Image 1 (cartoon, rainbow, N blue to C red):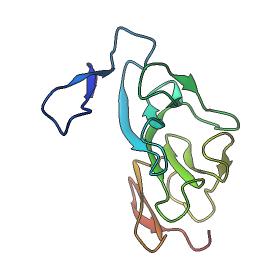
Image 2: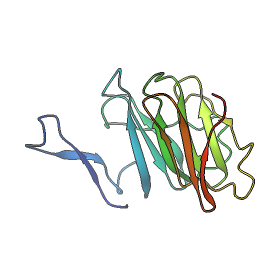
Image 3: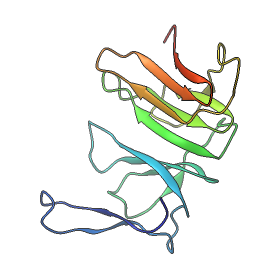
Image 4: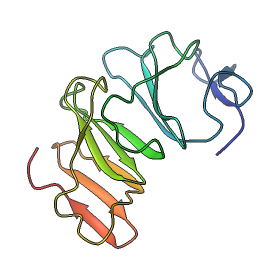
Length: 142
C-alpha cells in the first residue's frame, strides 16, 4: 500500500508519479476514486490523514475532512449515479458526503457489532454496502 502511485495519460504506455510517499501525499493510502465528471479530481483514502483531494490531476493535495470523525480512512467511493454523494469507510465507521466530499456525516446506525469499516461499495443501482470485521451490511436508506 505504501510507496509511490502512478498515473497514465496515454492508456498505460507511460506513467508518472501521482502519489509519492516522500511528497505532501499520505504515507499509506487504501483506495482512490476518480470523479466521473472530471478526471482531474481524485479522492484518496489515507491512513492517518483522512480523505485527500486533488483537483489538478494529482499535482497537489488538500485534506477534505470537515466533520470526518476518524482520519484512518480505508476506503472512499463516489456514487456513480450521483457523483456529489461520496462514501468513506474509516476505523470509526461509515460516512457520507452529499456535497462532493466537502463535509461528512456519520452513518453508523445498524453497524451494531463494529464501527470499523474496511470497505464501502456502491453498485450501479445506488445500493450501498459496507464490509466490517463482523460481516457485510447494506444501507437501508440513502
